[in-house]
Length: 92
Image (cartoon, one colour):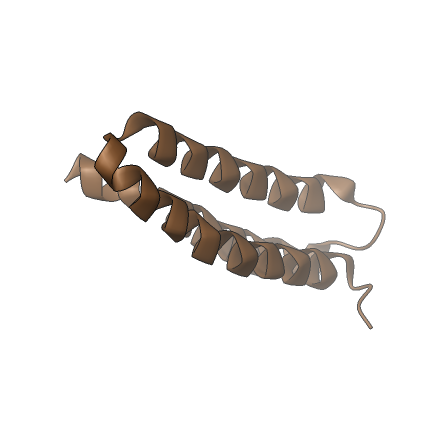
C-alpha cells in the first residue's frame, strides 16, 4: 500500500496543487506571493519525489521511473503555470 502511494506521489502532489489553487484563487491577487510560491514549492517537491523514485529503486526499474518522470514533469509544469496564472489573475 505504501509503495503504491510512494509511486503515485508526484501525481498526488500535482492534484494537491490544483486543489490549493481552487481554494485560494478567490482571495488572492498579483501581490500575494505566498499563494503562488506555494505552487512552485509543490512543483519542486514533485521533482524531488521523481528523483527519489529514480534513485531509490533497483537498476531494472530506474528506466521505468525515468520515463514516468519524462511524461509527468512537462504536464506538471504546464499545470504549475496554469495555477500561477489563475492565482495571480495575470493571464493573457
